[in-house]
Figure 1 (cartoon, rainbow, N blue to C red):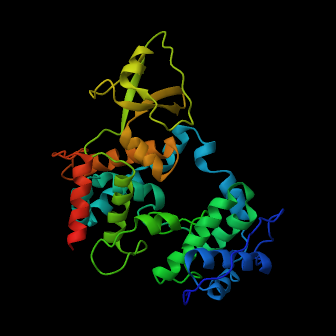
Figure 2 (figure 1 turned 180 degrees about the horizontal axis):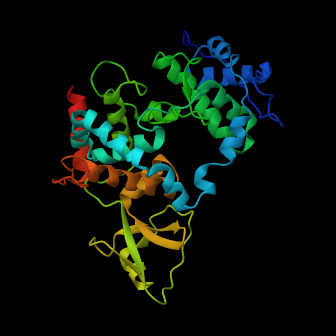
Figure 3 (figure 1 turned 135 degrees about the vertical axis):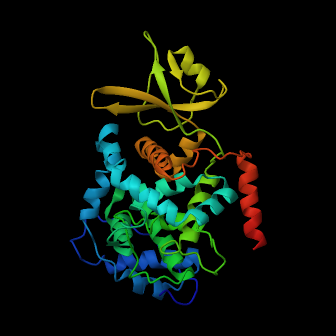
Length: 354
């Protein structure tokens, strides 16, 4: 555990030119500079921070994994096959049934439908079953000190992990997660844990590892604060007319088109939303050629969880598939549709009153 709080002198840290050997500690001087920086900025005890960091071990395999994420090497039809399996859909139905009361309570408070909470958990960790086997300390240290392209980001996450371990009384040498340092069923990075974790059942803890009340409330809060709109659409199919003049950037996630604008380019959207509704045009590559869709504001909120159009499309399809198999079926959109602001305000008011 990290111990007493104190301030210390600030220093600088530089990423080494070459990756450390597997299982080896990082240079003492480098860790000492980083510990001093964290202690000064975040009010932790410098010696306690350094004591933890000296246990970190390099994992070069992580560099290989982060350099080839599935979202960057797979077409949509290949990516979809990973998540839209009968087993994962059936497991999602069982998971929803097991936690129906808690999911519906959180949905009513924050305006995020249960199926999307369940689908995120299904996509991230198979409903909490596969949460990662790397020590988070090792993963974040490897990327902070041996991965120059994103070293600054992962140094911040490593610092946040040390602060989180202290505040939430976690053992920083025991916490495990993904190769990128994401933790628990939600695969929150440390900074997301610090910012969005909620005590969903008033037990005085924010446990995003084993407490489903906290987990459900936290993912709903994340989406709601990323702009999720209660009852709003997520994805819609489109029809491409002969002679269509549209252009598409498959990497774009911005809502930089409108329904009317796409119609003028020969892209007909299968939705009855107003013509000035902002959307993003999406490529959904199939085995026999390209198909297209549009994503709405709630699609954009899903991409804030994972910055990938493929991921957000998979979550949407998984949510719909799970919903259709429920007994009795639950509608995709809530029957009552208060505004996103009123739903979120209601949820916050209930929590502040607890």
